[in-house]
View 1 (tube, rainbow, N blue to C red):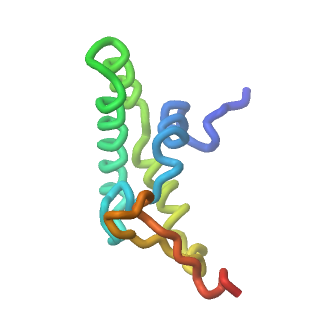
View 2: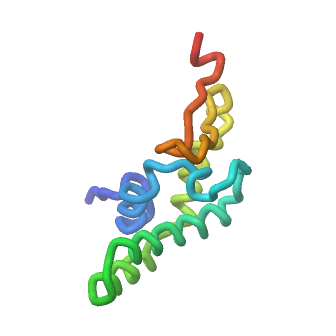
Length: 118
């Protein structure tokens, strides 16, 4: 039997990572340039997911179902994957993301390292 969880412990974790967390960087979630702990990032990810549900739904069955779905999500695992993607030692030769000005549409700008430019 094959699974479609792409290495995550369950399908709920994979779906939340894919749909909510995969296109953001920890600094966007934590609103800080400091490296968070996995526990801090995990709690922030849960808050982002819950807020996303409240922002995109109205009170009723669908919202209750979506909130219940989050109970199966392993946010610690998602935070661990994000740490691997953004804070791994092998990424130290890569550029960095810096917070832009309040006028920026995207909020963060990628600054390539000298190795990437050569």
